[in-house]
Length: 99
Image 1 (cartoon, helix red, strand yellow):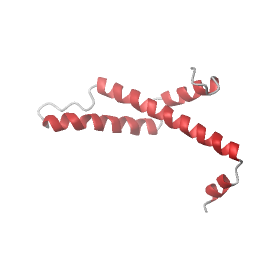
Image 2 (cartoon, rainbow, N blue to C red):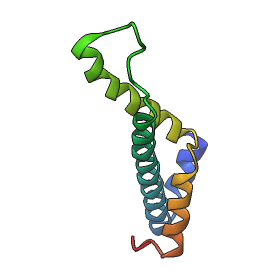
Image 3 (cartoon, one colour):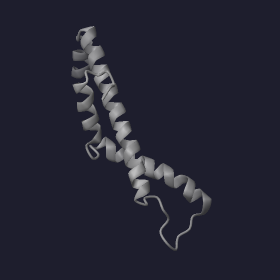
Image 4 (cartoon, helix red, strand yellow):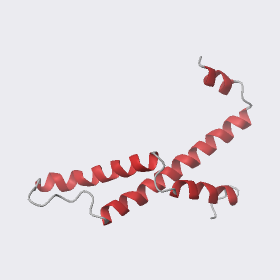
């Protein structure tokens, strides 16, 4: 058992639930930021074929996957700070979801 795992095993149940809830809120905020970033990237033309290179229908279909993956990677590394703002707003409202 690692040090972190053993510490987690000795936490009170209420504290474990609080940590899990905070982790879920953070994951949701990062996913929201990734969705926003994907739309911003698409609007900026990310995933569009370079002139002179045509990959056909397959390229168009997989370009959206590429943009989504890029957006998730950006958000996972801190993004533009949108997830952090969502988390702060959630903390201010007490986690009720009414921002």
